Image 1 (cartoon, rainbow, N blue to C red):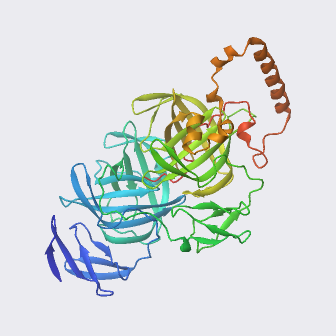
Image 2 (tube, rainbow, N blue to C red):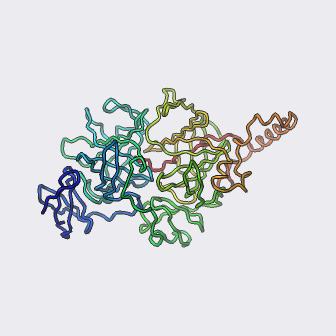
Image 3 (spheres, rainbow, N blue to C red):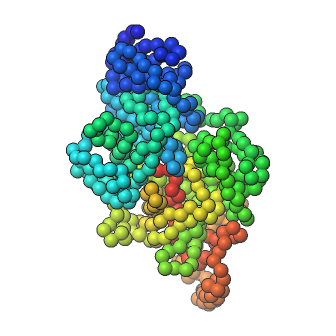
Length: 506
């Protein structure tokens, strides 16, 4: 055994009890490590290492991060020394153990291209049981108001490197996430196994980007091994290739079946047949330039909405966009225009009457409140998307700026963005030859009617009334047969979509 001097503090090294390979503890706060050679779980007690089991193999999430990558946060350097991979109902996420130069530790959480850097905090009062936190409710901890964003059962599925605490592998426990009102903060309450009399572990963090952290030592890229990510469709037998490691659902290009990947490609693949596909105007796989970044279209879904007490349904489409360094965004196509939105960290503050929400100094007025349902999907998704998946949605707007809230049973997610014109969409994805197909009501403001003349306007209005009368006698639009977003005369609510209950952890 040997003690050696590290760049910031002394660290401990000893042979693994399982295979004899060196196991290092750089942080005095680390009590557990996973041997990088034999996957033994090793506990340090003084100068003695004990093997208490074997850790499951890491799943390859093709993260740009890796052990010993370093960066700077709040003016202080840090190094990634450990890694935890968790699973919950809608997907997976990774937490990297960060050792700061002053010897303290933090966590860099990574979930579908979004990052949060957090540190442990103490609480001045007892923390309620997990079942006391209702999603969407507000609470106060340490004098700060928070909104309950999610309440999930999670489980550790793999680990790597050195760690301060290690929950039992595969054992479920509660994890509650609170989002700061008026501040982009995430307070996580970890109800994992604790010693008698101990309170749940709390950590407080904020959203960060890899560029902001000035990360070095990253992997060269997140390219995958194509050979390891393909399988035969459980419905028709055609080859299905998975392009993104984060994907939890995918559709077969041959038979349009929706396939559940949550159990892994090696597991039993559940599938659901989809008839008469809705055709996306922007083909899957297309790469476009928006806001100075290259975004690839990796998923597409058609959704239907219905306001309470209204028999009429309305529809819209959402394109899931992916960028390796920025994660995922949504390009939304509705009758009243296009918009680009992204899930946000932090919780906008809802007014007491629920008719407005404040976010980053701007007040947004509620436009629509409705039930949303996913009716058709194509491509890949980072959450376990399903046909018939339902959420409660509320849309807010302030000029061109948009804010959307989606709530499911265990999670509430906010998204923010802005309207964009159809010409921008056509240019971004090199579809200038299809500009007419992409045009929406945003391309023809009502003031332009002055140049048309009053008689044509009257004729148009009469035609519209006749069409509406006919539509009212018809059955509701069936998205399996037609693109419903273009059949309703209503300016669709849900026009700026949201994360569709995509994994919202961190």
